[in-house]
Image (cartoon, rainbow, N blue to C red; front, side, top):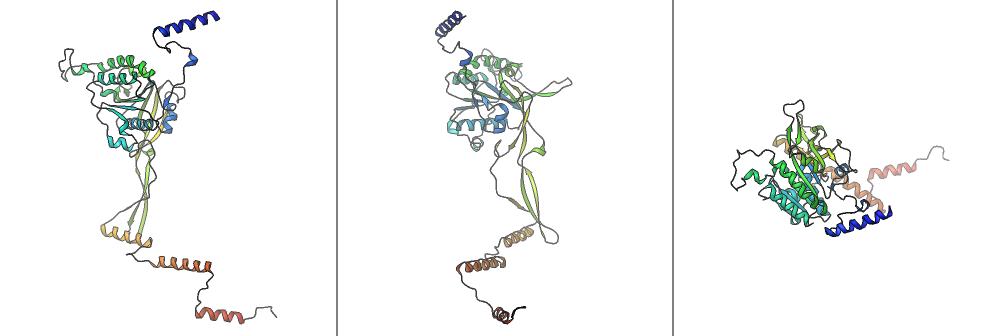
Length: 376
């Protein structure tokens, strides 16, 4: 047995030397644990097992306006904070620099590709970056925006019309792409995050539902597949504010109201190969804020809105100013009373006696001349 193991090690060494790859044949205990790239949102990171797995493909998809691109942008922002190099392939031409900066992205350090002519060009760029090991994260937004060259022109280079049918062309190209790109992505430890769209599936059957389009290759090659949707309106994050108004009698009233500042985002883990993530089929609810995405905004000052006519608004404002102790730049009686009390406290500290009025002094004198009951 020992002789076979020794001979095996010798054969493995020779094969690795022949193919000039010292890691081609190796023992299982030398393989390190897969690294993850955190999103920076604790609830989602814990849900998927620490972040997006490096060296593999991850897919997020869902209906419109559910936070897919925002989740990708916040992943880029957090990766840059950790010193990672990121590439954003914008095939939908929806990348907005202002929004990206608001979410914390350093645009000077971001590789942006938004003029790829076709799907093959975008895929070739990704393969080249992965082979050279010069990026850590690649975002593809989106899969369905990829347009294969076969959709645009014939084999002879003649431009095609929209009338020409190209059934399942993207699905075939994706299968080809994954076979070419999987090894460079794995060796380069690149986390590839692909954003997908939904298509209605099961038309004509008893079960009509939303599903991910792009072919079976996309489902097979993804390390994790996450479906995103909006939850119930009652679970949306809300912000409280106060409304001030006058009743018919002229009395001031205050009512606390709430406005939705986002929505409840539901993430469902449809597929996972990670042993650290939640199980397949499980879901989690994360609040999404219109202003800051998946991160809770900083606490703001209390919002007060004054309702009514211009005359009523002016009256309410004057009442508020009077309550605050400010009325046309002069102190109100309430403020003067407070200042008198403060002066008395200061006099008590310094030991000075305040001057008593004549009536108070006579009361004190009379009190001294009266003998107490029971005294001799």
